[in-house]
Amino acid sequence: MNRAVPAQKRIWTTATAPGIFPLFGHGIAFYRRPLAFLNSLPAYGDLVEIRLGPQRAWMVCSPELTHEVLMDPHTFDKGGPLYDRLGKLMGDGLVTCRQPTHREKRRLLQPGFRPSHVAAYTDLITAEAEAVPRAWRTGQPVAVTEAMMSLTTRVISRVLLSDSLDETTAAEVRDCLTDVVRGLFVRTVVPVDALFRLPTPANRRYRRALSRLHAVIDTAIAKRRRGAVRDDVLGTLLAAAHGDGGTPALTDQDVHDHLITLLLTGAETEALTLASAFGLLAGHPEVERRLHAELDAVLPGGRPPRADDLPHLVHTRCVVTETLRHSSPGWLFTRVTTEETELAGCRLPAGATVLYSPYLLHHDPSSFPDPERFDPDRWLPGRTTAEQRRAMMPFAAGSRKCLGDEFAMVEATLALATIAGRWRLRHLPGHVERRPRPGITIGPRSLVMTCEPRPRPASAASPPSRTAAAHGAPESRTAGDDVVDHA
Image (cartoon, rainbow, N blue to C red; front, side, top):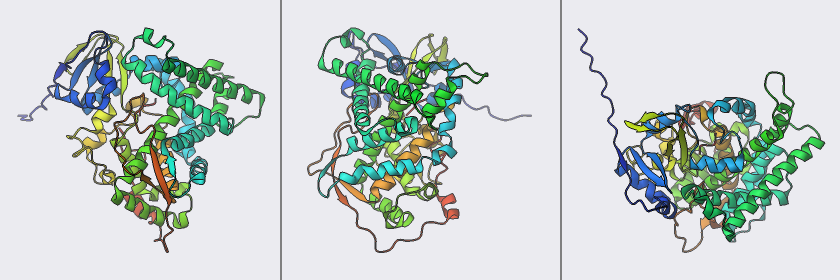
């Protein structure tokens, strides 16, 4: 006789968040105190209905429910207020396209972001990271966020366009990206288009930045068509534009949409991650000391890191991963139902907006005890639980997990190792931690610190053996596997 006890089905709770204002819904609370608003929602249920302006939306507050949404992209497709706004900026690129066209778009771009190809970018990343602090002087203030934005804009523009952007244009792109991501958030949480047609300074600044970004991309494409073939993402897209007999040729608009999508997603989130990492290290001297000890051992004499150093930079990568947990720049995303469906026992109509928040999941004390504490040791081998791996998703999950997840981890690890190996950044006297300013991304948008060179150690220990590194380093493709949803 079979006495097996059937698994008990989870009973989900649903509710509607209080505090709905006419016309604006929860938009005012969401804009003024976005993180506090998010943190308040799990107290009401696993799936909580909110209002974005006059529109209804449902916030997923559980890792299990979030995975249910992300692993079924045919039912929960890209869409909702966020992607409606992004679509006006990016067109029909990889981030904003609907599920039926996603696979072909991803197949086209995937080769440039495979692990073997990512390794080839190592020298490019370290060269750009070395250039960042060349103008720094001991004791002088450093605009850290701006410096990191310059770094990541240069890196992603070289990956996409080789050397098509000069220094002046790259700096202009950086400033335009900053204005665009700020303006997009307001347009998402208060989706009342009439407000953004008014000729206010903020609206004019947003439209100018958007127009300039499109112009830069169009100029780069036109210049390349007149020049030599290059082995970069633009070269891949232009080759595909001719068609290969098996797939339809890309249009000029397709090429444009892919480039602006990758440029936007490859610069802002990475810059905020690095800025957050330096800010957190300055407030946690023991973590910083251990990071410096590892860098002195693996990179003797302060030499720049190479591709074969990555397996040895265990603590450095843990710092990056914990930064993504503690201060994930990709903090809020939306999906839209393609048909009537059920989620957490709640019937959702076709076209319903469903939201999930990596920030909310990463700060859930049931998954991460003492979630406000910055603790890179959470990610050491053998320390992470299955529940934590499941809740950790700065790059989303499923078939639409970020195309550049490993590239982003490698870039952040190399940049952090290169700069922190030579410089120490300190908060200004009287520094007070401020609530992050909301945007499509979230993070320290105007972090200023002072810098001081790190003294070279008299002697450095030998780098860890490759065997030890193999056991000590997180698996690059599984650490935070369901660990800023770009794709």
